[in-house]
Length: 370
Image (cartoon, rainbow, N blue to C red; front, side, top):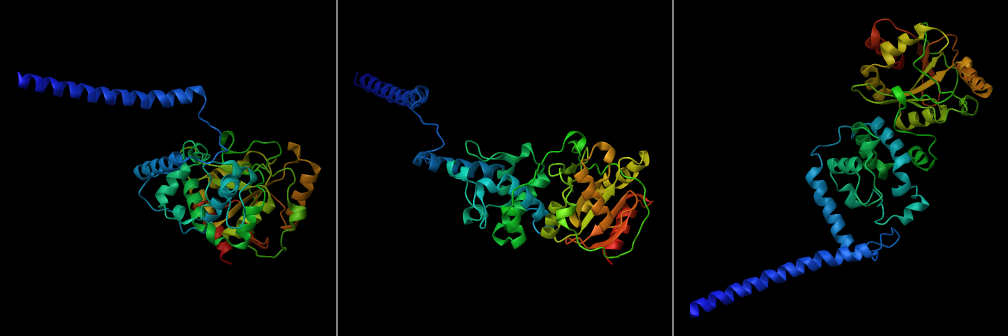
């Protein structure tokens, strides 16, 4: 009898224990759901995060990031061109929230909770390249940090990571880029990979020209007279349909010059006209649209497209500035590709070169070595 009573009491205690667990679990679910359903929980972004959110949120982020981030170093870490490209993306997309040591974040960033941290602080710089890459690519849920994978490819994101590592060592010119307003910078091409906005300079319509390897100096660029008005948002971005890097053809002389100075590389200016017939497509198809050219250009030059096409309805002011640019560099036929220093000093020029991409690049490099 005693044994039976003992077993019964143990069973009763177990029942009470598990009943207590069930009630506690139910309360743990019902109470939060009731608070949320009642609207008592404040979803406003204005209050600072409470202690629970401030503790659990970063812990969850760190665990998720460590589990998913690639274990690799930035393949573009030491590339000045990659850093320059990354800073351009940073200026347009990251600067308003995070700021830099020389440029404060935008006023609206004060309303971000959790706050967007300065990216030069030790806890950010202590992240691995892979962790920074994952954060930029995927974003952070329930914060103001978006996932850049929706608008940027992996190469662009690695460039941004390189820029983040460089933020504490910005040159005066790079600091100027960080404080200057963005002029129509965009990260996605229009249909077919080329900008189709009215009046844009289509570098894909070029004609055969003679090759001039001379190095006559025609002076520097006068930005005030050569900037093609109305083209601030007409910059080309072309990409391979299947693979290959994305390259940007600037149509604004000032932007191209600034980028060339930051990157410490020359400018390749393609003077073209869409009014010279089908032969104008040859240089683009054989050279500019190839992966080999894009890879070479991304590492060696800043690209500038200048199209002379009055029949497309280009404004008189635009045509005057294009003609002034053509006069400065003695452009007499299309296509003419002028290679110049970041300050606008002419190095040399060439046009169509038989033999395909490799032959054209070799001719361009021969000019740049002079």
